[in-house]
Image (tube, rainbow, N blue to C red; front, top):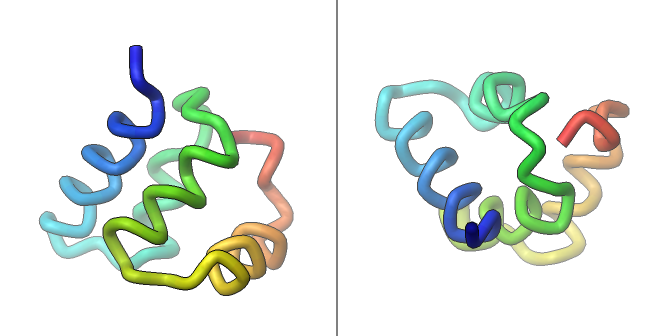
Length: 66
């Protein structure tokens, strides 16, 4: 299974339902997608730069739960 694509699909779907980025990330916790894949999804779906995506994940303090 391509967890990178799955992370993009999940984030896109959650954002499409009107969730904020933070709410979407809360929903994605525990899905075992992998931190790198979630960062890739933030870049693809939100257009974030690498540094911004990493900083966002770092600021949350729950990176190990992805």
